[in-house]
Length: 266
Image (cartoon, rainbow, N blue to C red):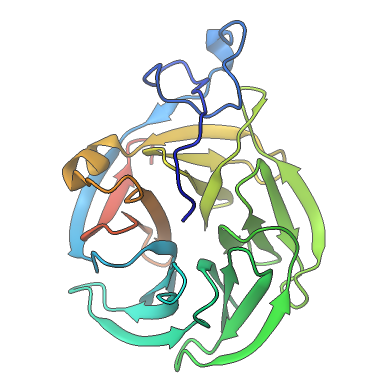
């Protein structure tokens, strides 16, 4: 969601100089040995995606793709058939609220709202709402590590929340080459690390959940170029991981495609 691209500058050595992630351009370049490496991607498969969906959260749960869609009056949580993009079931978010990040916790789904501080709890089979919880700050992205839910709010801070109460257990600041990295958006837990979209950037970052340090930048520019969106808000956003089959999916807001990708360092 949000409008207008953030003014951020990339501190990683091998990225295009005009793209940037740190709050301000560093006075001197980081030593080569400390710069975060970049990883390319290979497209394994392409699947249809609802090109009207303003994707805010994407997860793979219990053999199915689930998606949280944003914008007031249009927000919902839906189960999507991967093969053809058909929406099999949906649960509607109240029209005054803007749907955001989505995560699974045990036998329920939890979805955030942008400004309301309300998280909705859903039955994944019926997509009926069966409760809600309050949380602090804005809601952007959400994932879980099996012990806590992890929330982003557009700043450099990630909060680790008690899944039952959404109270903050701890928080960590995300850094890239020693500088705070904000605009952290959609999140996904993948093999002990956090993958995150950076709002308005054609890259993912891999974050060490203990230190908050970015350990890898993942280049999605070929996918963004393939989509060739004309809407400035049709940005890369949405990461889902099928842990059982080791499949990684990415998409974007208003994108007609879900990409299954493989990272070049995996």
